[in-house]
Image (tube, rainbow, N blue to C red):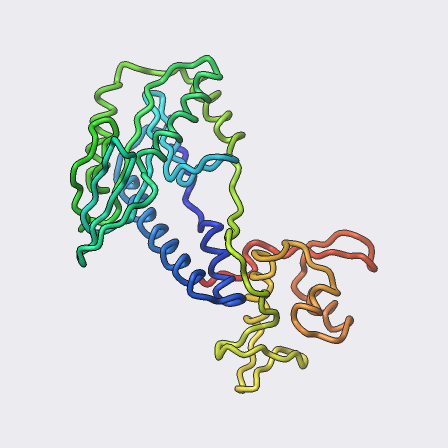
Length: 306
């Protein structure tokens, strides 16, 4: 089985950086919800690890195109399985005639949110168009998987299965038995996989609400901006170069993956051009351009604390 593991979403990276650089209650709440959703997706991913799957299959966690985001996409020579994962607690049900997905909290409060049923149907339709565009024919199965085990699933239409993550193994086994005689030729399977890989296009998240100016500088653990004097020093006495790496990570996520000497000095409040040059040379960044207009590429893994 070819496995494309789930990566930390752009949404979490951006919101986490904004929580340091432009904190407000909306950003904080969105970050908490995004982290809860991501942790729920990882719970479901671990269930897939327990399922013995054919080596001629593709399991793609968080498959994205320019218009679609699929939590998990499983492609085999027998069938395709499109999964939407929801991490919600309480009592949930769906009113089909209103296309309304509802949740009742323990407090008794009832709220409506975007229907995972409509989401998974839309994503499955896209995959069906890809299959048909290649002149192929395959069964496409879709389901909503609930990551939170305490959630009570109420009245749900029969057209789209909704079940707990613990039931995923049984559902896959049933599908393998049901479509055991449907076998896509290897050459066609590889054609489909290649097409899906080419269509993959990760998205870049950015909030749709207005934000205050982004806070600059190397931020100390105490919350203050550190001063550069042959290293980053805070008035609280803390000395840390980790704050520089965190700042470069935030710059990459919020502003640009490329940074010039002038931009570096402006962001970290460093007066000396030579000092900035030495710092970036020490980190051995990939660069392009002449000395005067040189730009440095900030690596994706410059800092990670999530």
